Image 1 (spheres, rainbow, N blue to C red):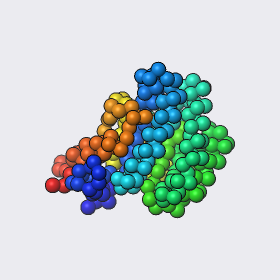
Image 2: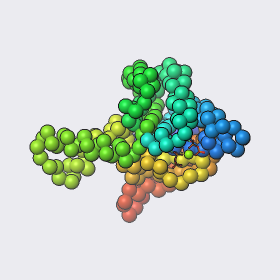
Image 3: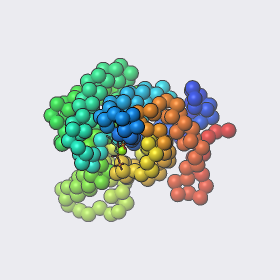
Image 4: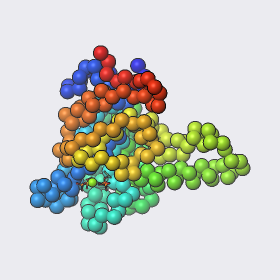
Length: 258
Ligand code: IPE
Ligand code: IPE
Ligand code: MG
């Protein structure tokens, strides 16, 4: 068995299916969920936090090792100020109310993205959660906050340029590619095996541009606040039916075992 899969027989996931080692999730559709109910968009974000709690728990139960959640993009600052304020408030509530439980469940929490633009109290909550859970070996939960894939690539390029400036030489292309990952915000994570986007949108919206080079994509029509363990299992089932070839002529990883 290769190290990015984990066969399970659990609940709604077929016994012969493969649980991806790393799932990346674009949690989308909060606004439309609220609209459909005649509620303000912020009500959708509140319901979205509940979905996040559920999916974090379900991922751990299903044996997912890495879960990376897109919570706020570097472009989401373009939204009305009141909506941004509410999203940041909900994030603080989530961190205050969940950190102890996550720690109890052996979850390690990390945040990626440019946190310098976040408020001081939010940064402190993030630091505390990261420090408290740093040694945990269960689910590796990463929250992407004020994250943008192009931003991350620009930061990485700058880091590398500085490094070689100090070293005093220009690396060849193989060296650049092999070392580039170590300059990314996700340097400690394997690449996602599966990227899920909810709400029927079929785009990447600047998420994990480098890392998703060979990820399998599953698009769900379910709006994020309604997304639950069954939907996660369904996405995993779909992933299980894929043949991953990584550019080779023959399948390198047939996921479903007969
Ligand atoms: C996802 O839901 C949450 C964030 C992007 C912060 P949206 O707020 O994008 O909801 P829709 O896409 O407008 O329905
Ligand atoms: C992507 O969703 C960002 C997050 C889920 C946090 P958006 O709703 O911001 O993406 P677009 O604008 O529809 O591409
Ligand atoms: Mg959206």
